[in-house]
Image (cartoon, rainbow over all chains, first blue to last red; front, side, top):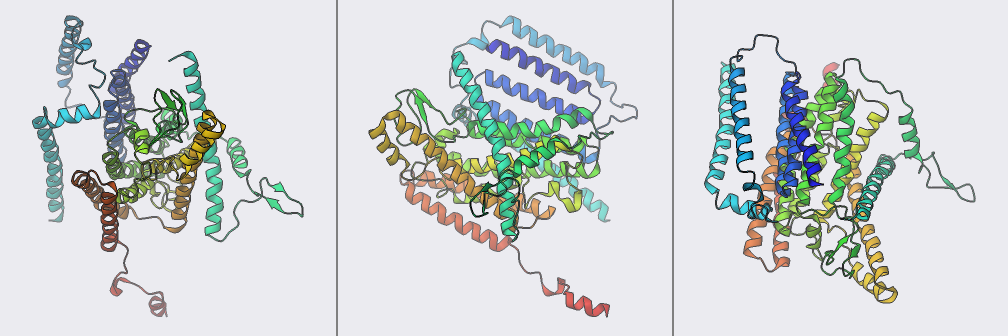
Length: 172
Length: 418
């Protein structure tokens, strides 16, 4: 039962990701990305992590892609631009790096397939409850957690500063 | 899980979905009749009635929803030539599905089945059994509700975009901005309840309200939740998404027939679902004074099964009664408050509700740590502080008369014309 659900969900996730890359229209891309994120949320559920399932849906599906859609719709930027792609040289580089990553994933999968996923500490019933995750975030991983929040704050301040400069320019 | 259990689960899900859609049909009638009364009109009173002797008619208009549905079914279904076909076709489904699945984790009542079958004491947690009136009990029920609510905006946003119509698209853009803004205040208002109940599970939150509804310790949270949930389901006075005067019809301008009906339906089901969530979180869910004593009496006289059934049906009734009262409040608000301006909407969401919700979270945390044992004392303190905050914020941010220099009196301008 679990295996069937996993296979279907994984297929949907992969198809969603591929279709997101291949579709010409930015809104279609965003919708395929939504499909991909939802499938990943179901995968979390299969891993007995309902908290991550909910957070994945709330944060990625419910907020981030809505913002993508909002910006694309507001700017009317859904069609691919006609002018020459100036970042064309990055494409082979990206393909090479993706191949490297895929190789790494396959290596880890085949070399360690008997250990990591089924070890007792991971498959404990309550390893992904909200309480456990909260404890981990605020004790073991406190420093990375706080640094992440500072980085996000820096991004926010940066937006305000840039916008302020622009406003000052237009006044002159 | 046996085969029979799966069948029962599917039947329950179907019944719940059908109940939600029927609820929508009769909610429209409820709203139209109430709006008519508020505006000193008669309202729908023709389609269907029960004739009484002496030419009097009872329940005039109770078939109005059926007439509406038939009319919508037989309308021509047009797809705009330049619409994005696939997105246009799936957007009504995108709007409707979240509105229906949101009901899955709400405990609609308490009918213990299986296990020891005893009447619940201090909450509905039958040992070894389950609650028949809750479709799915999951440990992160509240987060599930928030997730489904936030996904509900896609239907509106992509419907507006795919119609290839300026006005529809403005409606879609407004919807996504509005829902993202109010999601924060909504989530923080819910967080107060989660801190109070120390659980993400909806069943556990209702259990914790035995004899002590969370509207008392979370009064501030309740007010924030009501405002933010109204905005989250883009309901009047926050319905800029479909402001007829500015946007022709809003995001659903290009949709007709059943596609329009689906949008209409999802809007109303979401509204009732939000009221049901408010009842679950703040108004004690299915709890009602005296219910337990009555069920105990029936249980002692007519057997345990009868007691459980009476308790289940009455708790369902109590839940529906509370939802109806909140729905009445929604209609009342729609009839009373005019639509806000867009800048007022954003101001309310970011500069008023969000700080208030943060304050509520801080207040809940401090009170629960300082006075962990005396829930009456901490609840009363929270109620008083919350009410003071609301009065203070309303006094600072509320509507006020503009200075005389900014007002153009009708009389004055008439003099100028002469």
